[in-house]
Image (cartoon, rainbow, N blue to C red; front, side):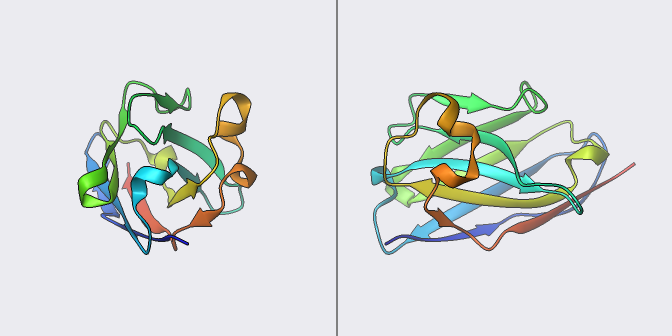
Length: 127
């Protein structure tokens, strides 16, 4: 079983950047497809980005495409989310998630496809 821990959140002005990290322990991260989700107050958890276990394939929600970049360093057991050109509507708690099963197609976008979750990190973007 893998344990996940996010870091890197904070308060930033609109147009700024943050890089989130998700460190894994307990199991090697290379065995998992990984994703980032976010949840704003009063809203459902939504898909942000995903990356295959090899790092070769990446996927993004339309709302972040061109601004966010997901990457992974399996040697460091860490997944990253580089967030640029941040907007107030990006304000949310960001969670990383892992699946031991290969996640493909529409399954990428559903929280139920992922078995393990971190505790989340708050990102607040001021206007």
